[in-house]
Length: 184
Image: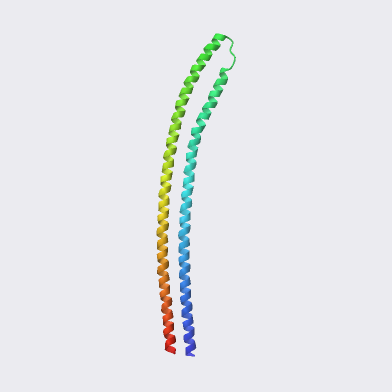
């Protein structure tokens, strides 16, 4: 009767040791999963930031392209007004000369404004691109170092927990072995 009771208690000890080891593994797996999810969220947020800044740069570039097109359309309208028929030849020639001068002035002014706008847009786009790339590299390094640190911590925890659980299990096995030896 006493032998049977000791066998039941040794079975319970083995079962408890197995259960403790399994629970430790589940705890470690949950910690690793949480760190991965956090890292994925950080990476997703960084990607959204980069896309938003890229869209801003694209909008500036579109403005730089739209300006010359608008100017070309304005010039086209003005030229169409020049084609209208005039009553006298000399007044028509005078009017044409006046229009030519106005068109030259307007084209020069427009060319200067377009050139200035293009330079500003190009400079701003370059600055923005460089800033976005620099920040993206910085965030990437931060995320990578955080992931590496978290991975190392988790690995250390896993090793420590595994060693503790193995030690406990070995202790229980030794205890059961001793008890069985004492019974024989």
